[in-house]
Image: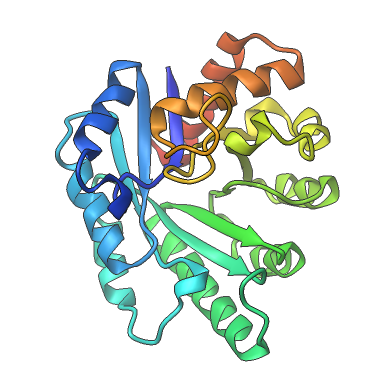
Amino acid sequence: MLIDTHTHTNLGEFSEDYDKVIKRALDADIWIVNVGTDADTSQKAVKIAHQYPEGVYAACGLHPNDVSDDFDFELLEKFAKDEKVVGIGETGLDYFRTKEDEKKAKQIDFFMRHIQIAKKTDKALIVHCRDAHEDAVKILRANAEGVRGVIHFFTGTLEQAKKYVDLGFYISFAGVITFARDYDEVIKYVPLDRMLIETDAPFVAPLPHRGKRNEPYNVKYTAEKLAEIKGMTFEDVAEQTTQNARELFKI
């Protein structure tokens, strides 16, 4: 069994066939967490989760690139109380696309508000971070005591990974590790009991499907590559990452 801890079959790319895509994963004994990026996709993630008796869950939040004053945090708290919602996010910081100090400050404010909701509702925090790891670590150290969380689609350095692990967070790896060798050192360092796997579908499909629309079924290729890099069996990686996901999301 595997758990794709971060996917987006709630996005428009899957509007015509999300049921087939999800069933293909479930038939392969792959469970999924559909992650919202705004109010609409969060609501859709919850709706989709309730269409399946087992194996499909939701996370709700606002992506840092989409921070907006009209986002309804009361609605986010309402979503968080749903039994199928296992995470708050994705939230975090993205300085790759955001350069202005004012916009960075807005991202930080929204990030901290998501952290407080995760703490209040006892749901896992799903962190998106790109080119902003130092600020993210500072914010988590100061505000996230007692919060369970994951750094999704990790693309930072070994030193940054060590800081997140020291904070008790999980590090999640996606399909990019099947064709880029930038993260081998980090993968070898991070203990297996702090690792998760994901697709971030429909984005960044792994080999052998690079360039095509990604989907949860492909998470197995990430697990296989993790096993290869860490010198472990696929079965050990599957078992431990699944246990990690169950513990993080309480599923």
